[in-house]
Length: 614
Ligand SMILES: [Zn+2]
Image (tube, rainbow, N blue to C red; front, side):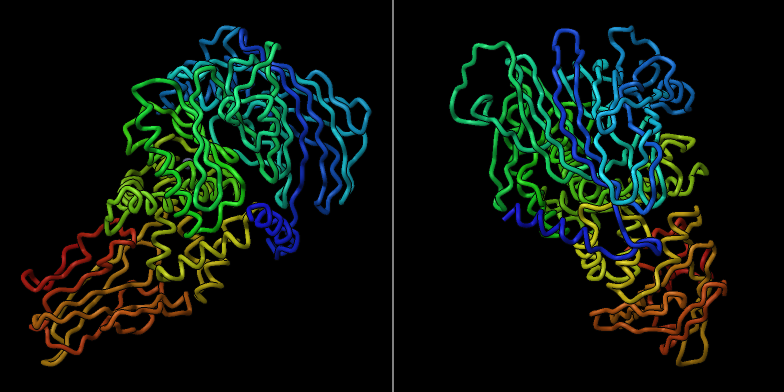
């Protein structure tokens, strides 16, 4: 069943529609890697065969690899950036600058061949630049063979050895990884602090290390009968000092693993057949939380299956490791010494990334708000249900974060490259909070039902691919019928804010009232107005935004659609066929899903004067 879904996804990806006026294509990689880890000095040797398929219409004369571990060296871009930004990540600070040679990280390429012929390369920080002797023509495959060696840095950011919680090896961003080439060209982004973009493909990885260690990894273990460690019910005895763990991960764009001699390994088969693995330290303070987490993880998985689309792989692992919570293919590394709600909350967020990053694989460096924001949006709703909080608006935290940012004076447009925000705090609020509000507010604009359908169609059309912001908004347009380019543009490419207000409520004649609304700021919005009458009745008046060329559907009983408001007009006159003294209150956006930066002017009540404060 799962396998079928996966192959269906592949078929869809072959015949997918247009992007940026060209037919969609994506590159493909097949990695076969063999790596041997020395758990005494944390150095490893690896060999890599990479079959690269150039599905682009372009001839490639060079390629680039990421060498992420080189970031963990004094003087690297990550180090210097962390020491010069005003609000450095506490986990990094100046720690890289103080690493001794044996504590640093590195990835060194020892040799590289293309189709059996030696080619030259240059290591430039965290990127390997490779000039090809044989250009790769459109539609061609080429095979690269590489020998490399690495050293696992002391745990500073995401990956590393000996985490604060005592996990021996958190192995993300650990191998020479081909950079993505897409319709925008090469994305050989240096590793400065955050965000990834990778090439879709299949991984076949063999990891050899001390047999006392349990390995958790992306992909499916091929040789459980040789390994044991909770993968089979049988005890496995071998004479050798090491074990070789063999994993295969199909259709992913990354491969991550972790290892520790003290891991407890539990398995749970979810209702949809997905095998959930849990790896955590044998530490009595955390065991109870990690046992309770297992049922919640299944509930979260089923929630995302239902509300986005089915999880397509056969397994997912929640692994104690890393330095917070970070998403990888079929796996998350999270710190484990947390309160139970925090453990579930971080698991919810990272598991949601299996969809918004590991299935709909946006270029995180450019569109960080699409993976962090969409993930925050859906995990807030999932947590509201799974933890039985049932808040009316589960996104209030995201709105608070965004409004604080919008009023802070340090906001940069969401199109800012993830590493190039002036402040880490501005990046965080923009990617996570403003990104989540993008979706929640889209629900206000096109209606919840249309938003739900949009997410599902986005999954159907863009899983196992690299969607862009435009691809997403086009789905929302097609689902709803509304014009939405203005929303994508103003919300994500500018720092324009929303402020609509009630300017005046006055008697028009003895049977009617005139309401004057005002747009104070630049960002356009359609308006939901709630009018309450003294007789207890209530009316919803919807003022369409003219540039949307559309009206929001509603199943409200007293729903009135008023004339369109064309954006350039700063004010709008609304006539209500009731005398002024029968009106109790008028409010712009009672739902508070419209991220109005100044709500003081949104409410008129009869008790006050008819002049509403600005
Ligand atoms: Zn995230």
